[in-house]
Structures are given as structure tokens and as C-alpha cells.
Image (cartoon, rainbow, N blue to C red; front, side, top):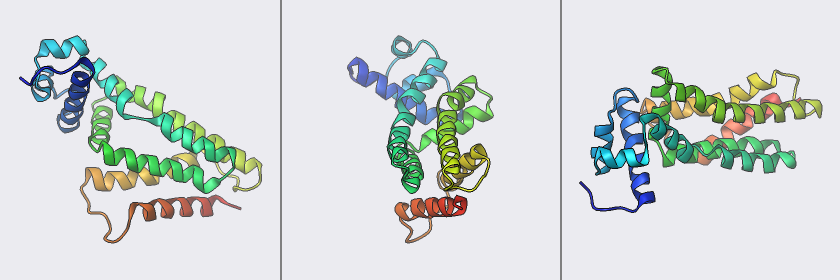
Length: 200
């Protein structure tokens, strides 16, 4: 077992261990014993911090999925009606978060495929809010006469779909990124394609 850690640090270590294991073996395929061993503590210590695996899963989402940061940056651009910057903020945050916590995408996919209730909760509390924000902004810009009349929700999901597909290719399938293409170029490509395509 590892040395004594303070409460918050021990909690962080347990969350990181659980994230790694859930992303490799799925929620159902991971035991609390395995998580405790990976975190360098006993199961009893793990249960002091998290009473159930569900509680631990919820803590991972709360700690790792920072939708508020994404929305805050996009909302600032939305108040200026800076279309490119609204969509740029979403892609940049998505790339940055995946780079920092690459196993998170695997965890979310695993839990969705397993039919875990937390996967539905993740969609409702995080993803739906992003869809609603973007579709609301698109609808507003349609009313302004800047964007073509399209279904705002379908358009919002299409834009996020570009980002998700890109991340799936590289983080899940392990496809090598194009040589000489910086992340900033990827962002600008997605933003330009979407904004130019939706404008009148």
C-alpha cells in the first residue's frame, strides 16, 4: 500500500485510478478491489471516500468534464456575435480536455455501450447543455439573417460531430494525426467549414 495521503489527494488518486481502469475494462468489468490496488490503498479506504462505484463514476464526471468552462468562453463570444469564436471555443476546449484526460472518452463510450445510467446522466447534464447553447445561438443568428434557415439542433449536433469523429479516430482507433497539421489548423478548418457553410 502507498504512504498516507491527505483526504483530497487520496480522493484524487482514487479518481485517476478508477478513470484508467474504467476506460480499459468498462464500469462493469472493474472491481473496487482493482481500483483500490491501483490507487495504492485498501478497499476500506476507498469506501471512506466513495460508498459505491456509481458515486465514484459521478465524481469522475464532475471532476473531469468541464462543460462550464467551455460554455463560459463560448458565451463571451456569443455576446459579441463573433460566430467563428463561438465555435472555436467549443473545439479548442474539446481538444484540450481530451489531451489532458484521454481515457475519459473511452470511459464515456464504455458506459454508453454497457447501458449504464450514468451515461444517460452525462448526456442530460453535460452534452445536452452544449447542444442547447449552440442550437440557441444558431437560431438567433438565423433570425439575424446571418445564417441560412436550417434546423438549429441538427446543425449544432453536426458541428460537434466533426470534433467527436476527429477525437474518435485518434484517441480510440489510434489513427496517426496528419503530419504537419497543428491542432490550431484542425480547429480553424472545422470552424471555417461550418461557419462558411451555414452563412447566407
